[in-house]
Length: 106
Image (tube, rainbow, N blue to C red; front, side):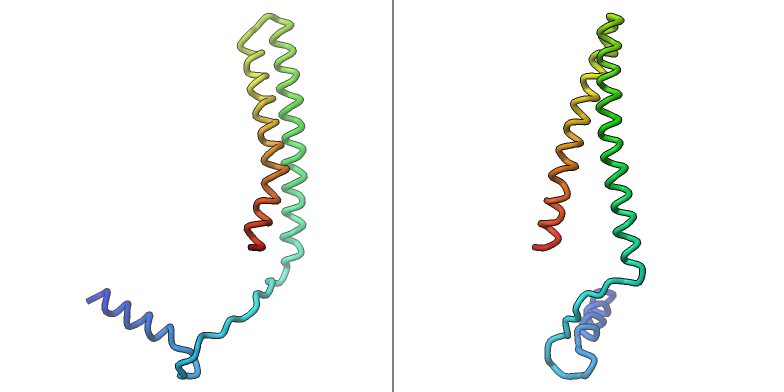
């Protein structure tokens, strides 16, 4: 019963507003008011992500060096892992934007 009602409702919605049997109009996308501020916020986020990647790599380097100097192998290993994660994040930061742009324009 519910499925039949939903199908009827979808059939009504699929009809064009003029009552004719033609295809639905395809309007062009329009940016909402204030879209310029959205791109500015995205720029801030990208800058913050780049700063976090650099800070993470430097923190890992300091942790690695401090762990090796103090002969504390756990800290040295944690520093190595942090540096590798920062390099991976830098790779995603560099390549991810092009991948998202390619998907958005396709």
